[in-house]
Length: 399
Ligand code: NCD
Image (cartoon, rainbow, N blue to C red; front, side, top):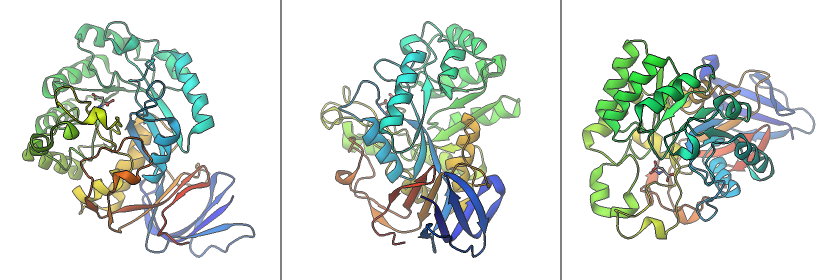
């Protein structure tokens, strides 16, 4: 269906545009941008007055759990959660069963996604076979099968020699390495060293400490090509929550000190942080209760992320907010996305500054555990359009 979105505030950092504009979507592409466009016959009208219209959001850090963990999440439930959260593309992590370490596994995932997914899925291949940290994968083959980055997420490649060899082997492939850094500060320092030596593009996932950000700034000053992301929970909660709640507040990397939360917020404001990413990590209720030492780490993030970012960063300009959620992730992962220029894919997120209360029981995700449960968040996704199709509209968003 062709759609005319009228009266919204169009925020497109790729075009340095922040203005009231109508947006015409036709045959899955952006067809026209203008003031007071005339509706054409057969076009559906979406009245976006009072809302922001942005290039579709990209969550570059999602544990979709496919293949292998349908009790935690499926392609259908995870991507429904994504579109409700405003995401038109999600990058999914390779800590699956089997791991995304083989082109055949990626191709199966991509073809399953064509059948079940409500949004675009781009896979992140593993750095080492079985994510076991010993044997580098075939990066060119994984890239040809659709991998947009490489990571052993959930685990750090412990052996620096293996990591260096892997980075050299991957040097000719444009997809970056995404580093999962634990113990964080020491591994960030090591990874920045390997990135600088090998010239491989590097992205630090879920940065959570003030020191990591300082190391990253220093590496950039030395010319290292490195980007980073922060999560909604690390921008909001401290270790005190884990001390009080145990298993349900367990996450990797762990919740930190108030000074770290402040440093992350500052890093977003001053441009050090490139992307906001949810680290959506759904688990079963049983896995999120009991002894914190054996409980599974991670939270369901897709459906709260946009509201949670706005709550943590209320003063962030809309342009910067949108850049962190689409333009920058698109650039880091080399995606054809993150822009509403005429001819671009019609992936659009419409959001508004309306309060809502987080109710995990209503999540589309199978993962119901979130530290944001019961919180009132100040920003809400109103509609999500993928390839010109309206795949989600909030109940209170009346056209
Ligand atoms: C991740 C998961 O559940 O896949 N959990 C998390 O807390 N981020 C993996 C991991 O990082 O351990």
